[in-house]
Amino acid sequence: MNISIIDWVIIILFFVISMLIGVIASRTAGKNAKEFFLSGRNMPWWLLGVSMVATTFSADTPNLVTDIVRKNGVSGNWVWWAFLLTGMLTVFVYAKLWRRSEVTTDLEFYELRYGGKGAAFLRAFRALYLGVFFNVVIMATVSLAAIKIFGVMLGLSSWETLLIVSVVTVFYSSLGGLKGVLLTDFFQFFFAMAGAFGAAIYVVGLPEIGGLNNLLSHPNVAGKLNIIPDFSDWNLLIPLFIMPLAVQWWATWYPGAEPGGGGYIAQRMLSAKNEKNAIGATLLFNITHYAIRPWPWIIIALSSLIIFPQLSDMQEAFPNIEEGKLGDDLAYSAMLTFLPSGLAGVVLASLIAAVMSTLSTHLNWGSSYVVNDFYSRFVKPNASDKELVAVGRISTVGLMVLAALLATVLSNALEAFNILLQIGAGTGLIFILRWFWWRINAYTEISAMIVSFIVAIYFESIHNKLGFWPIPDDMAYLKLVFGVTLTTLTWVAVTLLTKPEEDRVLLAFYRKVRPASWGWKKLLSRYPDEKEETGQLPMEIGLMLIASVMVYAALFAVGFWIYGQVLAAVIATLLAVAGGILVFRGWKKMR
Image 1 (cartoon, rainbow, N blue to C red):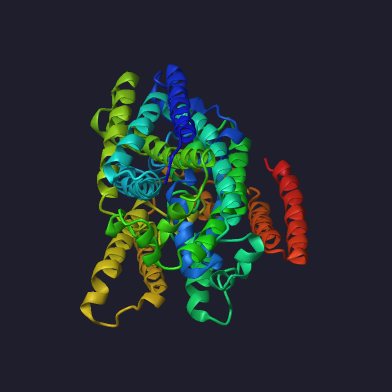
Image 2: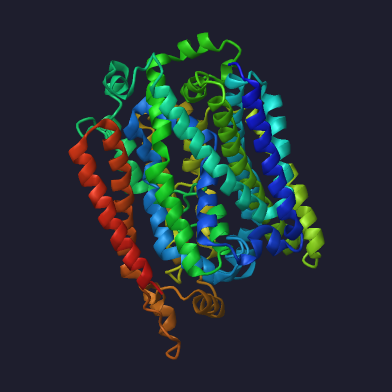
């Protein structure tokens, strides 16, 4: 691909602006650890919501969507569209609870909800397990996408790509803290969206594609257009639609789609001005993430089936790509090589934005665990704010180095996505119930964490090698079913066989967070003077369902308008608008 001077000017200006934001934000970020990691708990909903969207708009996301569409069609995206249910549950039930907790990180929650050595172990272990191991895996998949994109579009080697992206991202992340990340995300998000829509519009107009009508009627594409899988094909319906909607959304844990909220989503909610801003931020995130953003990627993925129908076609077009990096996800980058001068620079900068916004969030989030939940809690409790900020900046650099090293050995984003889902299988229900069922204790979470990890390793690396009832690739969803079942049975048994947390710990948590008291009645019956919070849980769950229908209707509406199915598009649009009115009225009534 030929990059013109105009393209390079656009890219360089993008880098300069991103670094300047980090420098400006650094004036306040270094004051103390809470300012560095939570921006003083004074952030508005619109800035936090856009930051959440920008973070999940990573460079590996269009690659992942392209991989899915080329293999399983548009309907294959239900493997992640189903997480909307988790997201809306967080919006209307958990956002305000997180904000009321006033913890610095979601891991600090453990010593608020549980007590004793079990709580301390959970906080310390997960600080390293999630903050380092899990976080590095996620960042490595993002870095892998950058390697593929810039390898195809700029001819850069893996190490050249990683060096450029890492240096700039670490620079503004370590200087500006969360405020620098939020402000940079805001700038980068609109740049990224402009690039995605601009690329999709141009690609459809290519002579090889011949316009939208030719694209949708092409034999390579026509069979891939269904938004909902064919109900007569159970081999696709079960793994692509039934499993995600029936099990995956509530039973698994995945960064950015944690049941009950968590990770960098919780970090954003905790930094909001108040509960209303926390709710508004997560609502904006879910609407944009699921209803608006996927379609430009889907259009480009469908177009790639015409120009690069087979992997061999991409291999022939790009002989310099390393063999281990060649996959269906590479098709997105391959299609971008057709872009003209000027637009190519915008799209390249937008993809850099996607990489950097995700990496910067994960770096700040991961280092917040290392600093707040490990170093200052267990290594040096009396550390000064200056020292904590320094440790945060050092850990930011260390996490980026580890992610870069891992990225060089990964080959496929979808493969990493599936492994992470399997590791979290069966733990999701705990994160949903622990706010509302007093009986859950620290050992509930410890047992679930251990069993889910062991089961994941067994099914991913050992089971089929034993030769005993091997699980074929087209029934790989059974791994998730077994993982969820075994993990859930284990943690329920452990919960009922171990002692509950001490009453003083449970009552302190209940008084601070004020969840609906339905699952706390047995505890509260021992304290007649304790006020029961009836809460608004039925209304909140109703709003969650209405909001989910609203966003799915909007998602379908965009698709139907693109497909030219006017009647279906009008119906879906009206349903989305009606849902939006009901959600807005319900949100105003929430306390």
